[in-house]
Image 1: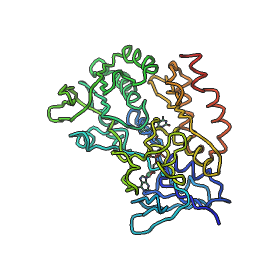
Image 2: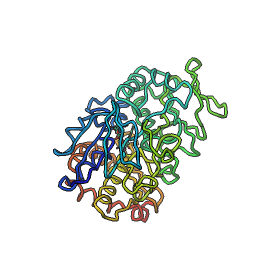
Image 3: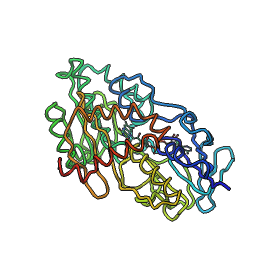
Image 4: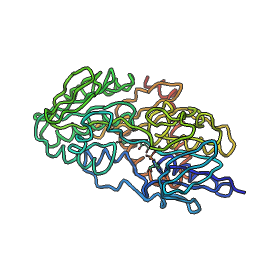
Length: 394
Ligand SMILES: Cc1cc2nc3c(=O)[nH]c(=O)nc-3n(C[C@H](O)[C@H](O)[C@H](O)COP(=O)(O)OP(=O)(O)OC[C@H]3O[C@@H](n4cnc5c(N)ncnc54)[C@H](O)[C@@H]3O)c2cc1C
């Protein structure tokens, strides 16, 4: 009899895992609460470029023929009894579980944030909110435009500063730069938390006249007074603001409950992605509490390792990150590191920006046919091993 693999979540991690498992050996079922797979990085280009390029595709259309798809919300996971409870009373049993349920904004932890998002939008939640940001920057003809990191964790470490750089480029291109002050605030000691990448970023902020405030831990937003207030009582005045919301894991009950962190991320081994205490259950991508960046690349690499482990190989994660970082004006860099090596100081280049765009163009194909792309991806990761790059760039 074929072993049953149940994958909760048909996003980046879940779809890759489903499309890699050999169907001669496994009965593979993907469960998702809604019909679409979203390419979340494109929210940035809706928000700051008004891009109309589609950023979603039907999950069913991305899965190989033979993979089962159930559209339903998973409500509970019973790890000891290998059972996923779905909304509406149905349950699904498994031999192996892969939780790939992503993460999303948790507005409730910052007073006034939900109202601010309703008014100004954000680019870490929905297409509608990203379009609100586009409206916001188009309406702003003067004053302060603030981008504030609301707290950890959030998807894609470079994304807050990408928004800042693209906003600055937008206001300059509209001839408004002398009237619009661009302000960035974050709780970290420096604009980019990892020092080597900060050495790339901070000079660009200065060169472009972007102001920044560090150690700013956002407590609440008072939109009547147009101030963002930190936990220490420091006030930042704004005319329009976009907050990067702290994220939380999916609203699923786990048994035993102690596999979850307080903000509902699932605890797992960082090398194998096994859910704490369970050999037959894994968590990949943004849903996991392992200390790696919440990026699609991470989800992709972890999905590959988990599939190999289900097939009996002793595959292990290296903790490799590879976040493309849009620096505005057609420039980019990549945030590259692994468990053994800190972030590389990769200088800004046109090539890195083009590589980010090439990745976006190839995204749907990579999700559908991961094995077709393996030789290219493997060669790229080998060529850009952090230990090797550090010999060139530090
Ligand atoms: C602005 C922005 C820029 C980004 N830029 C980059 C980038 O340049 N490069 C990069 O690699 N990454 C980037 N990312 C991050 C990347 O998009 C995510 O890390 C990636 O999508 C994570 O994949 P995942 O499979 O873990 O989760 P997701 O792709 O979010 O998929 C999770 C799925 O689980 C489903 N689900 C959730 N709860 C349930 C439930 N209870 N029952 C059933 N289904 C459920 C959801 O509907 C969803 O389909 C960016 C993200 C943002 C927001």
